[in-house]
View 1 (tube, helix red, strand yellow):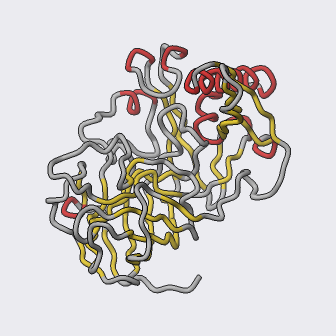
View 2: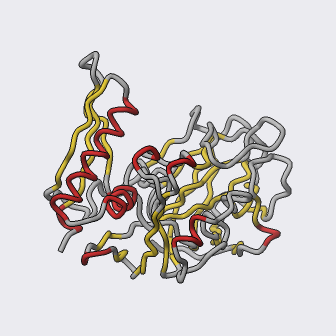
Length: 316
């Protein structure tokens, strides 16, 4: 698609914040239709690089976490409006990481299953992330965090998503998609960060393929829309190759959706270990980067079904 960049926001300290707060001064003010190119640090704020080892990952501080580039004030955006953010391009910097922490720290979907942590540093080509045993995960970059400042005054953490967006980790907000965000503060005050080169639905280990990245987006103000929480229009494929393809699925069945999700992922880890020769740690990392979770049914009480899917095309 044809476009020209009107403004650039680099990742220098004056353009980065670590909380949601409608009192933060805008880093930039734009008109509807303007295009902005954001530079985004990785989720752990550059505490380690592409040569990192497991200890570097495990010792990373969560204070601060999620360096967010912005905020951008969009002229004419008022509370009750909707800010449309059209994502035009993503450009990673050639590397990323996926990891999980020691179980006692309680992060991720299955902390009780992994006493020790693990990490994989990915070499990223333009379209592929390289894993172990010749496994290749197609990349389709997106921002884990994209949102507006809340209308309520004060500082709010970046980990939980909220009505105005934030850390939603919706893997379909890729190039060509449009994210619609309800405006609560004047100007919207849009910020983005926590970019992923790829991610499985669920981000089960607590990280996707985390990667520093450039994000290019066009803004528009929609006064004809009325939404309570974020919505997205996307042509993102629902399989890694973008076409119908063979996949292997493991089900989790339980009277609680979270318990069913845990079972589906545990069964997928079992499958990847037994049939694909991965260690359990490698399988957990691959689940977070490339295994998709689907809610298969929520109508057959007392048990619900969640299914985890992995595409055959990832494996040599």
